[in-house]
Amino acid sequence: MTKTIYIETSIIGYLTARPSKNLIVAANAEITRDWWDTQRNSFTIYISQLVLQEAAKGDPEMVNKRIEVLNNFPLLDITEPVENLAQEFQKQSNLPPTAAYDTVHIATATVYGLDYLLTLLTPIFRKNSHKLLIV
Image (tube, rainbow, N blue to C red; front, side):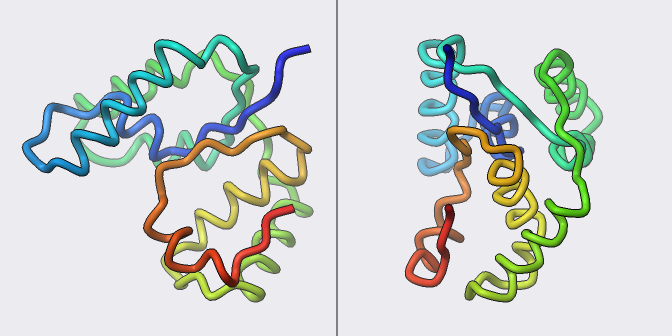
């Protein structure tokens, strides 16, 4: 049986990103594209309505690219248990209030019992990892 994975919006952003002179952005985009090309078919990929909402923001051309990538993945509902767990993550962690959507992504993957959460929001998690417990 294939493993399940929740794809958070940063992955789709880097996958469809325009070329960048910023070395970190360029490296993240390259890592994402490499994973997408070599590993994606090893997983059953899931997204949520929140991923679609975040992907629909910004430049219309880039929005179209992001939505096109997301079109065929199963959509997980943001249920009351997901919202409750996200709030608990926010309370129990040192994550900034601006990370509220990130806790929803974590909670979605957790509540639905997915094997993995794929994200490139490493600065938030690295900075706060000593306070963040993901089960």
